[in-house]
Each structure stands twice: as structure tokens, then as C-alpha cells.
Length: 129
Image: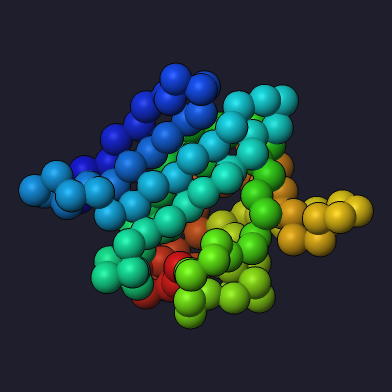
């Protein structure tokens, strides 16, 4: 798999994961700021369960080691079988902690300097999402 990184014309940081033949199978998007806002980590349904989302998330975290990262741990519409609890647990295994705010109970934070590795690295290839 090939992982690419770019900056969109809107200033977003974008990571894309491609198969050897060039097909896009995953994407992560983050908005810059004093605290990074991770707005998307998605993997095509037929490529889930192989650690691709973990690889994308680790790429984002490695890029922003000295900047806090916020994420809203709420699955996108149509992202079955993911649910909020599973998604929160997955982000938690990667160093994010609950950081709810009024009107945003699913907000999580990865503090500056938190290691990029999963707390369950041996399970990364089989963990969802």
C-alpha cells in the first residue's frame, strides 16, 4: 500500500492510502490550528480490518507530535458496523482521551507528545475501524 500526504487548496492536511494499482482505499483529513482537528479517517468497506485506518491515524499523529489533536469520535453516516463506543475505544487505544465539551460529548483529545503507537500494537492489524 502507498501512503501519500498533501495539503489541499483549503489548507487541509490530507493523507491517502492507495493500492499498488493506484486505487484509493483510505483517507485522513486534518485542519490546522493551535489544536489540530482530525475531521476524517475512512477506509473503504472492503479493505477494513487490515490496519489501514490505524496506519492513517499513525501518519497523522506522527506529523503532529508536538500539537494537540482533537477528534469527534462519532461514525459517519453509513459507516456500519461502527458505533460510537467502538470508535471511542479505538481512538483511546491510540492515545486519545475523552474531552467532552458542551454540545460535543464525543470530542476526544490526543495531547502533545503522546506516542504514535497503539496501546495494543499487536492487535492493530485486526482492530476496527
